[in-house]
Amino acid sequence: MTDPHNWLYWFRHSAPYINAHRGRTLVLTLGGEVLEHPNLTHIIHDITLLASLGTRLVLVFGARPQIERRLEEAGAETHLHENGLRVTPEAHLPLVMEAVGRLRASLERRLSMGLINSPMHGARMRVVSGNLITAKPLGVLDGTDLGYTGRVRRVDSDGLEALLDGGNIVILPPLGYSPTGDVFNLAYEDVASQTAAALRAEKLIMFASSVGIMDEAGALIRELRVREARGLLNGADLSPAQAEALQAACDACSRGVRRAHIISYEDEGALLEELFTRDGSGTLVTDDPYEEVRPARAEDIGGIQELIQPLEAAGVLVRRPRELLETEVDRFVVDERDGTIIGCAALYPYAEEGIGELACFAVSGQYRRFGRGDQVLAMIERVARAQGLERLFVLTTQAEHWFRERGFEPAQVAELPAARQAQYNRQRNSKIFIKPL
Image (tube, one colour):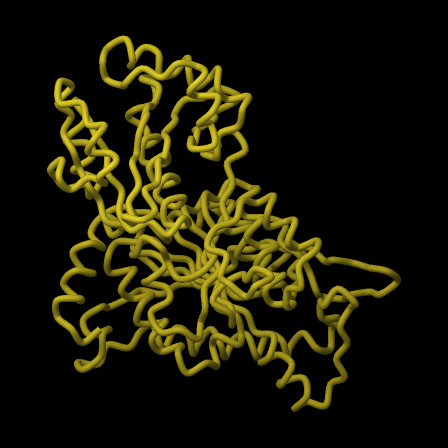
């Protein structure tokens, strides 16, 4: 980013994201392939930057290619179960531990660097690890004894919280320990997903070779609900790495993690772009079965009408008869919580001018202080961008500051589309605000 004006714009507009992530817990995965990629240095710098901004970080790393090489060097014959998991006989366990130990030391070394000419100068990161994962053997699958290949049994969330509260970056290897003193070889995706859930982390972030999950046309899918992601797992042509990342994302979200992200480890700055820009760089997986912002359906009309009638009576919204709602319901999005419509908004596009009107924007009074309006607005903005619109305008009589705080700027009637200018009610005298998308 050589243009200083572009850099200043980005830095200023990243402030809301910096504030949002400060004090939050993020779990990041670094597969064995990531640890060998030339872009790892930049990823480490970005991780250090996140820690410097007050984000609580847990790094879970994998070691599949390194373990494979170490076994080959030792002349040890390796076997994979049909589900892709490595069979780990007792004789292989020291080699697995050796490969993992080297990677952990290398990762700690990189996070400890502070050369005066590097982005990490003065960072003084504290990096810790420990026996924080209790594991159990997978046992016999389809007649095959997987030996010391295991699965996560328990995450020491109290221990992790104490380490994070102390300002440490926590590193978790793909190993787990049992009360009997055994060590188990674990899938790092399982460690990451279970750890994120145990900590109720804000995000699980997984690095993959692709920029995210692609649709059939090869375009990046920027956001998936868990049910949509599971549908892709059952039917889409995904690479093994993509499928493992998507499965871990679904598992984490199903256990209470708010968001999971799949981003590229090959693209420099992908982590910062995903966290500090509006559109991100990869695929976001999220789920909230209790509440959902979605396109409106015909059966929502009664709920929409019940929500907006008090605001219409108070003169906050223009009256809309039920007949009009029935013909325009496909323009609406709604926030449904436990079967009740608690928020709504409509988008009226003016395609030739590349602008759309945000209208009939309402949130139930008891939820206005909990970010529901922001969620509805975000959905409208996504719909508008999907329709190729470049700007959004709104007319309001009582919510001027709310919209200004969210990037809308004052405008004049002459800046509206010609058709909307002709409909402007000067007696109502609504204030006009426009936001670039």
